[in-house]
Length: 152
Picture 1: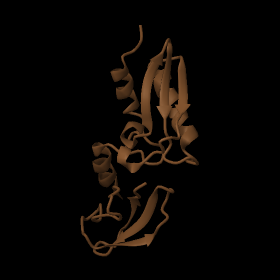
Picture 2: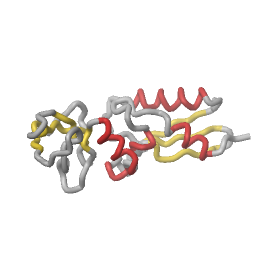
Picture 3: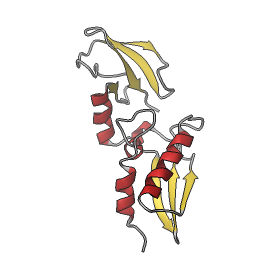
Picture 4: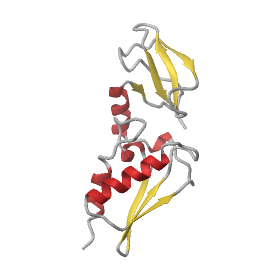
């Protein structure tokens, strides 16, 4: 008997992103689909960008989580088109990012406020942050630096 897909989505919702452990791979939107193909579970993954260094860890974490739940026949499918976009972040991801100290992406560009003190007095330090998906910003009020998750 095959495990219901709703259970599999729930299990994958517990697998953290290796670069931002406050959000899951499902929150991040990189898990695009799960489906049974006869007795094999196929999981479609779209990395945040084609050269993402965390892709191999993501694949390993997905396989490990599913095997721990008794799923033995797993096929991971890498899907690059359409490319990942920050539009795929869940609403929960935005809240979890901010609670973690990372300003969530905004279509208008740049953070609306500091994720630590919520001041609107922020400035960009660098377009490049701790990962290619993030830029480095600083709050002019509390003086704390923080990452901003860029719109992609």
